[in-house]
Picture (cartoon, rainbow, N blue to C red):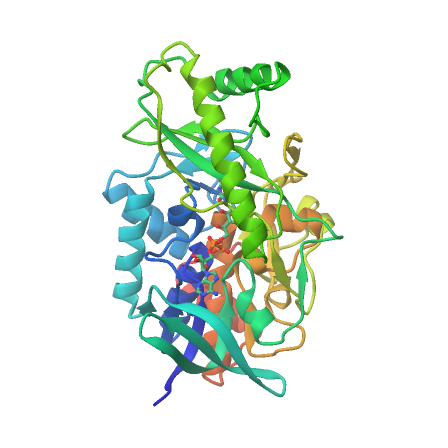
Length: 413
Ligand SMILES: Cc1cc2nc3c(=O)[nH]c(=O)nc-3n(C[C@H](O)[C@H](O)[C@H](O)COP(=O)(O)OP(=O)(O)OC[C@H]3O[C@@H](n4cnc5c(N)ncnc54)[C@H](O)[C@@H]3O)c2cc1C
């Protein structure tokens, strides 16, 4: 027997969680499929512990809905900081708490969740995807649905289902980074983003082997005070297991080199690695080709947001390559931009929607909309649109916006 759903969401990261809950609250029967052992995606599987894109530079929160429910759940567990200004505004959280809150939010909403389940194929009939093929330790299975949301980050579902996709932008992808968490660094030790970056730069200039990036995000975790660093940069093709394996090994070499440098800093002598990754963090991979593409111009010079189904607020943050400095370009007033529904809709597969970093943005727009705060927003919008389509209801912009507002997504007018 093949189980049938209204909506299947592929990938349980920030985008997938929000898509599944958004679709379920819009009245659909929803299956969320995740290959890992927990929900959260990069926030739990790749040590990315700061939600970006929820606030403007002026500390105005602009993404609500499922993202806000996640924040409320984390606050109840004492597991998230107040918004902090780095290059832009973010909150830092404990990934173990994200796992728990994500489970609870999905359970409360009535989303059916399958962990440890990898999508390895999709069935296409004419213009539509009709089923996903998955594997777990009992074998292979198939699940059918009316509509699908691709929140896999790598756009696996779209690729396997024969929808148009594009790897990166203009022949380039943003580089990936292995997150490294260091413990044993006392709270009062003068070990900061600036001191670590300066020491890494000096060590690199002095010819220390194994160092690449020196300037990524470096921040303290809530409660433990552990140091999280995103400096072990790697260049690889995220579609290739062989190339990603090489990059994972390279990232671990960099992590050890970074540890040696931190141990030379005042207060750093007892530092140790709590964990790397566990997985290398991929910033960019495949994008679905949307009915329209979000452009850098729309991000930097936002127009009216009356037709937006999601809001982005993170600057364009480009990681051009290992060892190269990050490039930041800031948004004009009001400090946030709208993402229209057609950006989330597949151009050639009408029952397929993009969410999170699979969304179709050009090089600049993609380097902004990929962050997790925005992934919650595009996810919830894609989930609602997928549900309304599956149920045969009006799924155009006004109807999707109305349902998102009913779900407390608080889209600005
Ligand atoms: C090093 C690094 C630092 C970053 N820093 C920040 C930051 O500070 N703040 C921020 O907000 N963003 C940051 N980002 C960006 C952000 O982490 C991602 O763009 C974001 O997680 C996108 O969310 P998502 O839900 O689209 O994808 P993901 O979080 O990648 O989730 C995708 C999910 O799909 C699952 N999946 C994939 N393929 C399959 C399959 N075939 N079958 C089943 N499941 C599958 C994966 O296991 C994963 O759980 C960073 C990224 C990196 C790499």
